[in-house]
Image (cartoon, rainbow, N blue to C red; front, side, top):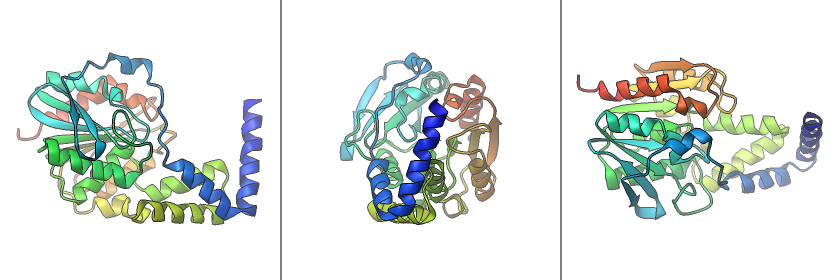
Length: 275
């Protein structure tokens, strides 16, 4: 019955979007930037209490564990610091200071809305207040925020991208396809997103952001990720010279952050700089 209801709902959206494309695009755009508070998974509860809660400019908040060379961690859309529950102790045990940033509208940071540009700006604020960082780990939209910040003068010795989209325009189009939007409504939606953010979505594309990168990067992604298809990591790897790939299976979009073998490889990669 649920599948049948979803089928009818998609058919209704498809019809409305073709009859009233501008209205449909406006309704989707209004909902798109609103950040929901998503319940954490059981495995996230293992994250230790932070040593410090850091208040930054622009209403941003970060949490810190341990001492040593600093590693910034940036969650994805509607993500949480607790998603790094397995990574944090591994970094601390390896002699790093782990710092998790709450993007705008997420966690303890101010606001109820966010977008890719604000994610990237937040990384810049964190770097100015807490850097320099030895490396950074970005999950999903947090990964593309790192790429955007690198293009705007962020310096890192090591970069780790986890389940990161290679193209915000492709991601937006994929959302529209998944809910049954027609082409005119899709184009109108992306136009409204561009106007609302203030810069075109085409600025957030791997071929533009990665071509001049020289930092060592580890790109890990699950082949059965349904939210950000695996091909996105292939596209980032093709655009970023000298990238290293770590494909996985069976983890989906979020559980990859709880994969012990993935965490081990990430920490090894971050340690390896300077050997």
